[in-house]
Image 1 (cartoon, rainbow, N blue to C red):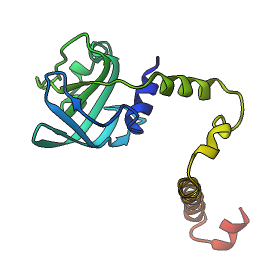
Image 2 (tube, rainbow, N blue to C red; image 1 turned 90 degrees about the vertical axis):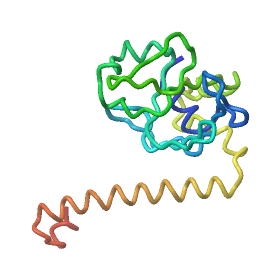
Image 3 (cartoon, rainbow, N blue to C red; image 1 turned 30 degrees about the horizontal axis):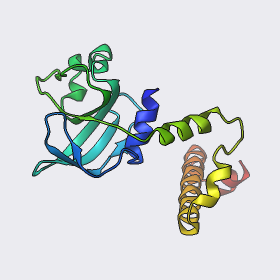
Image 4 (tube, one colour; image 1 turned 90 degrees about the horizontal axis):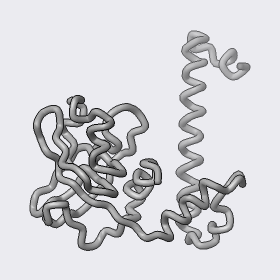
Length: 178
């Protein structure tokens, strides 16, 4: 198993959302898993969770083993001081931040079929690995996803055009030519 799989599970809430509990037995509700971070720092920003009666907003860090917190040297990095939840597949250590806080821990689980399908998609050489499963997605959801991807692609093109426009001192003719 790779840590990216845990990111996939967390981001898409494939861990089952009913009757979740922290390692110490308090009820956990994932209000918003947050924004996936592809750069340095915690794995998810702006996450919102409720532990017991208290709602928290902050960062979430995921590891296969809880002790990976130490092997990744998070205990020495203040960027991890505001982690509100440490999500792990295997609990093998209590972790502490550089600032001395101990984040709540959630031991994540999932159905075996989810991991099998994830690995199957990674192993397929086809351009669209999930093409045989697209018919299972409702039409509205498919159209919404395509619309969102089209918008994202258009925004990327707009950013490139703006860069060229700036480099040509706002010369639209030259920008469009390029």
